[in-house]
Image (cartoon, rainbow, N blue to C red):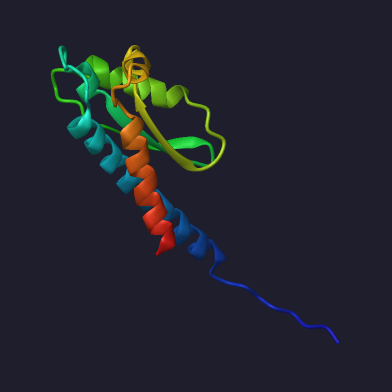
Length: 132
């Protein structure tokens, strides 16, 4: 006896799952950069650090969406963050949180929160979403 089955709708289900994952990563990325802009503990002389936090959503190793909320006067800070996100090697699916200013990691290493707290904020949001 031979039994045949036909599965339909798997492509639609996969698309729905990927859409939900992307939406969750974008939401976490937006919240992360807002957190970074509001909670940076450093002296803000040039406003480049405050205008450079950004995120990239990566799906299947490809950056599919970026967000950098720099104001119009800090286009260089925005461009540096976008370049940092584009250079990141990320083989799977996930979220990149970055500040493209070359001295951001130095400021963070001195104990000031540049993007560290933003990463924790994104992690918290994503963990809440996975718990339902």
